[in-house]
Image (cartoon, rainbow, N blue to C red; front, side):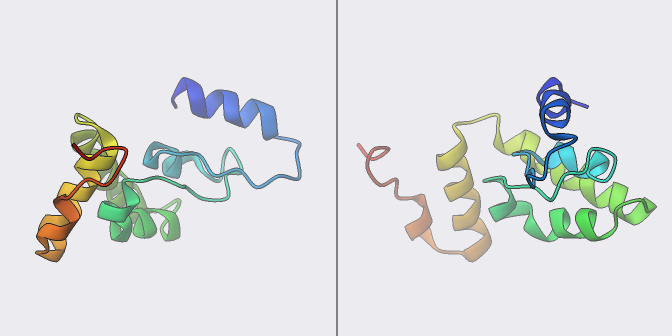
Length: 107
């Protein structure tokens, strides 16, 4: 578990707040740490796998889907996050419009 996830879990273990960590790495331990889900920019790209991981918590299929979602996230985050997600979406949707960065990322 990442240090961030550990700290998040410590802060909210007895809270009535719903906690949504910002990485697919949290999906594998969501029940253990009482996470309510995952909010991540990269789920725009790997959302099907993230959903399979969430719905399959505690199963081998869920674990494998989570690993695959995290592998995609790892590759995307090698670059600036927003432009990399937009680039991936342009490929998925076969629409070059997604490649255009808008202010403040535009030239």
